Each structure stands twice: as C-alpha cells, then as structure tokens.
Length: 244
Image (cartoon, rainbow, N blue to C red):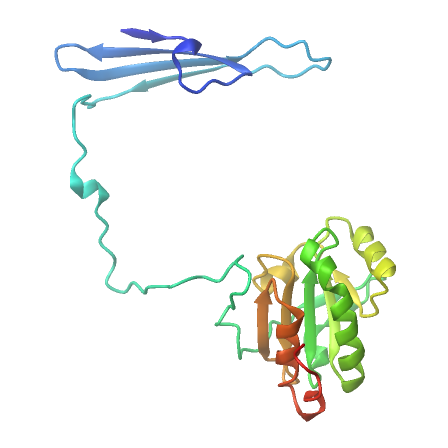
C-alpha cells in the first residue's frame, strides 16, 4: 500500500487538500485499488460558502504496471463512406462557407424594439446586406467609417442594409449606433437564432444576398474592399461601386 499526500502530487490546487492511497499486489506487480480524498482548505474569506469533500474509490480488475500499450490502440480505420474535408471554415477570418454560396438564405425573423416582426423573405426582389457585429468588436468598430461611405453609395441604388448585433445588452448596441451615426436598421439577436441560421461563428460577419435571396458573399472578418467587389456584381446599377 502506498499513501500519497498533497506534497506528492506534481500539480497542486491551492484551494484544496488531496490524499490518495494505492494498493499494489506485489506478487503480480499490479494496482488493484485506489482511494482518493479531497477537501477545501480553510479560508478566512469574509463570506460564507458551502464546503464539499469528495471520496472516490477505484478498483482495477486488470492493471499491469509494466505493460506496453499495443500498437492497435492507436490505429484508426476510417469507414468506407468517409469523406475528407480540407477545412470547415468556421471561426477563421477570410474563409467562406461554400455550401451557403448560391443557396437561398434562411428566412429568419427580425424583431424590432417595439415588437414588430420583419422576415427576410419579405425583402425578396431587393439585394440585402446583413452585417453581424458587436459594439465590443474592434474590427467592427474600425470598419464603421468605410461602411458608412459604402452605405451612402449603395442604399440609393437599392441595396437594403440590416445590422444584427451580438451584444449581451441591446442598449449597448443602440448607444453605439447613435454615437456613430449608423443609419441602417439594426436588430438584436436575442437568443442567437439568427446567428445560428447563418452559422455565425465570429464577428464581424458579412452576408450579401442578391435580389432573389441567394447568398453571393459570406465572409467572417471581411474587409470592406471585398464587400465592395461583391456588391459590384449585383447588377448594372452597382457597377460604379469601386472595390477600394
């Protein structure tokens, strides 16, 4: 039997005391049982907290201290129908979700501060730019001046702009928009359903739809110049939008 105290562990928890006892069958050289006890250390904190202790008993029917793990343990045989995926495109700036490109956008619902509901499908017939952002997002902040210029160029030509903020507090997003003078409507993604529908894994995320509601631009961490280039393909009226 071997008894280990807190000083014997390589990793120490400053808030807890641990003890462990190990039973070893000398004749076979195997571990047959182990008990572990842990409890919080005494504290002088000026608040009351619940104190938990834990006792764990583990038995090992077959454990060989000198055994070598067989190579087969680390061998993986792929199923016959497996498909290799080069990358998933989630959370990495500059990568597109190819499966969304050219597909109809999900018909999400936008709820305004006054409770009115607006659906994305109600905008069919007009190109739409969806800007997923947050007031705490540095790149989102940096892009505002260029986005304001682009809005002034494209909104009169028929491009509908919609912001979807990812702030924990909708008031923070509203305050930010007022301070920056952002004119397009914004909706707070209360439960994350809009972001989930578009597989949003980061902000900023720019999604551009053509007049038929198909996704023609989808990019996380997008640059405004890239967005300009995509807008220029919407039709003759947008050809004058230079991809600065």
